[in-house]
Image (cartoon, rainbow over all chains, first blue to last red; front, side, top):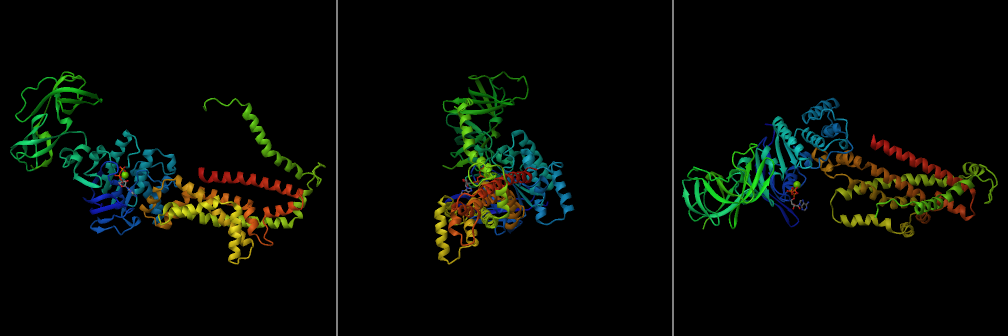
Length: 370
Length: 262
Ligand SMILES: Nc1ncnc2c1ncn2[C@@H]1O[C@H](COP(=O)(O)OP(=O)(O)OP(=O)(O)O)[C@@H](O)[C@H]1O
Ligand SMILES: [Mg+2]
């Protein structure tokens, strides 16, 4: 692996009185595709700028392969950045933009030529070298910015929402290419985004941030399936988030929980639970099945509820249902449209329906001991 | 409502009047520069004033030369200072930044006569003899805010993360300045320089206060000639200046076009 190991330890950042980063510690492995994910204003860019060297932390350290780089100025760090606005030099051609770092090092002309061509090919722009940035499309500018940031062969590449200015289709496409470039080059990528789809689809690991704090670090699977924090449960995807009291602990993986207004449900748990604990549980809408016929022969620990369809949103590949199971409780349920003719009966607004899901699909996020 | 086009008559009338009032004096001036008579009455076509202008007006050409030297030198110095000042105000953060940027622009708003008097008092105070050098100092002083403003406007147009990008890619401070900031600001620097040249060439009021014996500029010289009656030589000179301005304007447009739109 050519990348660096990046360790951020206890980084604090104040802008005047404003506490922008609150004791942030993350550990990024060599060659990892690591995402910083969080809502606008949570401090992602600030953290990235501290790693790049544009901003000093108020306290704490940034270690590259064990060495603290906080005293090292930005132009001396083996770290390069792909800026959200691309930040291409408007007066230089594509070729000279990419060649810029090499020219600074006074590299020989012939060597510059081969190297720039190599990196323009890496980002699939072998023929655009003579153009000025203003003559390129948004996606092409993005590629130039990536080639320019990679040509110094940094050990860490920082990307600050690099795709946010592109349209949805192109974003998908560029994301796949970024992933391919990462596989090819093998250096550490730190990718900032507020888009959970982007973060989940390409990252090895994701750090979810909120209000200047890292609230959870994990693989996309862990972040999505086992959120350790109510913020994460809500921020990543849609969910049903309900609170109740444990009435029975079943083995070491399950429990029975009484939810006011809903009833008693089986849930999955990986934390020590006891009868009487108050818990918050997340149930992903796509894990819930829905039908207007009562399902026959459900297993022992299946959860089954009955309700009326409050609202129905059709969105092509799936439908969203809001099912009211009592006066004060509704569930979101997603149904994928896997066939043109559904096997089951169509479900309409105000229909009576049954919803059911496996005990493993309710996940305990928070526990409050009595 | 801005929808319908104006019906034309009124605005066409205004347009015609404007053109007449703007250009009529110039047309008359050009015509009289070819008048054989020293008086206002037309007395046949002649080039005698041009002859006099080019071959027997050493004092006038001396002043013209003074003006040119001062314009080029003061514009160059004020362009350097103004450009660096603009970059400093734009890119660096320091104490009293706000106060300094306001202070830098205030001279543009102060009446020239006050600047002229204050410079005169200042030069007298430091016992600096009035000469071409004091004119140069004065012109540099009043040109700086204009260059600063024009370059600032240019800098504000471009994305300032390109400077961070330069650092990020390994550039030091001087390299960022010479390879990124200055080239990107260059069109602004050029316009700043041209404005400074123009302002310096045409300044009368301030120059009047800070010029010493023998250090006349062209505007001062023309003024002194007029005090002894309007000489048709001035008409001829004006025509030359107008022609020169038109040629320069056309040239600089094409040069700028060539440099930035290839
Ligand atoms: N130079 C600064 N001075 C004062 N406050 C700042 C400065 N830079 C950032 N902040 C504040 O710090 C907080 C975090 O900013 P940051 O740019 O890191 O957010 P972000 O997570 O990148 O958001 P976004 O997704 O909108 O880019 C914001 O509330 C912002 O207002
Ligand atoms: Mg940001």
